[in-house]
Image (cartoon, rainbow, N blue to C red; front, top):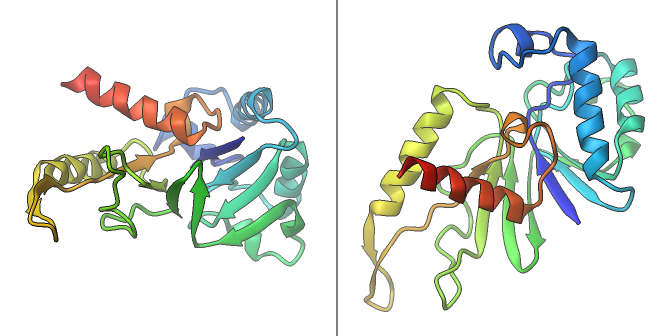
Length: 206
């Protein structure tokens, strides 16, 4: 099984007090909770794609953290993953570290980047039944005004009608998923779990 998650920010106290207001007493409590949630879900042979901003900690603390997390790790580097620049970083813990990647997930393409890509590769690709073939998974914006703007963009895009190469009129697909850790209560989720979450979220707002 493969899972995805973004913006955990281990060791980052400001996530409790400012930006996210996560509500933990301190970073130790936050780290312990997030490790428990991760390891309750992920088994040794599972894959986890981290969509950036894993750790605000120093390289020694982050190396220790990496040894505690279950699974085969793939890293999309975020703007706060400074530990990766240190020569002592345990990069062997990752299958790969990239700023951008594309992977296959049960016959669907996932476009992976820490930052939201509004016009992503494969965006228009659908099956004969109109099911999306491509999803854009991102992080970075947490649950902020920037995320609200991305959601507005998606809504406008989905309402826009085009004429395709066969002369048929159809709406533009836009399937962007912010894998922000607080949405999943700090638990890595599969692509299908993330898709269901956003379907429920849109349904609740309609």
